[in-house]
Amino acid sequence: MATYNGERYLARQLESIKDQTRLPDELVVGDDGSVDETVGILTDFQKIAPFQVTLIHRNRVGVAMNFLLTVQASRGSLIAFADQDDVWLPEKLERSLDALHRYRADVVIHGAKPVDAELRTKRTGYRNVRKTRVEERLQGNVWATAPGNAMLFRRNILDGCDWTARPESQMSDHPFYHDTLVKVLASVRGRTVRLPDRLLLYRQHSANVAGAPMTLTDGVRKYSGHIGHAASLEYRARIVRDWAQYFAALVDPERQPETVAYFLGAGDLMR
Image (cartoon, rainbow, N blue to C red; front, top):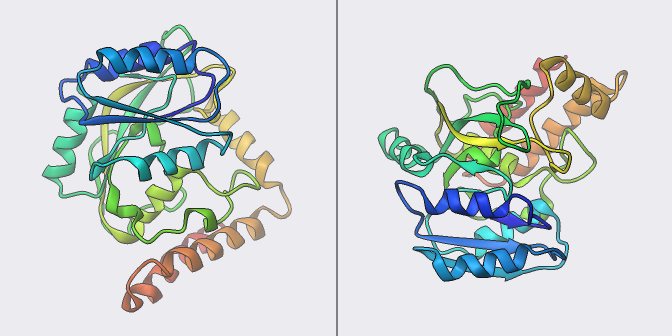
C-alpha cells in the first residue's frame, strides 16, 4: 500500500483488508510524507491487525515510485497493490489467488465497481470484461488499461527491471505508473488473466491520482487532450518504440525480435 494524506478513507480500507476471507501474509505500507493523521491510523492498525504490518516513511518520492519501493521492501512472492481510499470486497484476495493458480498466471486483473466518496454506486466509463479472458505472452492489447488496485501478480515479473528508466506514459510527460509497468511486463514475460468478478469498490473523489473516466466520451476526450491532435499518432508511435526498446532488453535474446514486433504492431494499429 502507498499512502499520502489519506486520513479520510484509510481506516475503512484497512478494515476491509482485515476482513478478507484469505488474509494477506503481511501488509507493507509506504507513506510518502503525510502531514495529516495517516501515520497515526496506520500505527493504531498495527496493534490490532491479524497479520504483520510494516510502515515505511518516505519523503515525496511520488505514487509510482512509492509503490515500487514498497514492493521491494516486502517479503512475499505474490503482490497485491492497495490504494488508500478503496474498499476491498471480502473475497478479493481469495478469488484472485484461486485464479492465479488455476490458470498458472503471472498477473490476475479483476473487475471493480466504481463508487463515489460515500460508497454509492457511480456511473462511469470504467469497463469490466464480461467473461474470464486468458492472455498469453505477446497476445494482449498493449493499450488496455490495468488498474493496480485490481491486480494480484507474481513478484518475479519485476526481476531485472530498472524502474527509474521506464518510458514516459502515453497520458503524461512522466514515467508510466507502477501498474502499467507490471501489466506490460506480464504481457512480454508471461500470462495474464482478466476476471469479470467485481472484487473492489473503486472510490472516485476529487483527490484521486487517477480514476475511472466520468463517461466513455469524457475518457476519450481526456485521453485526446493529453496526447494532442495533429501529433497524436506520431506521439503514440514514439511511445511504443520506447516500450519496445525497454522491454526487449528484459527478455531472452532469442525472444527480442518478437517482443519488438509486438510493440511496433501496437503502434501500427494507431495509424
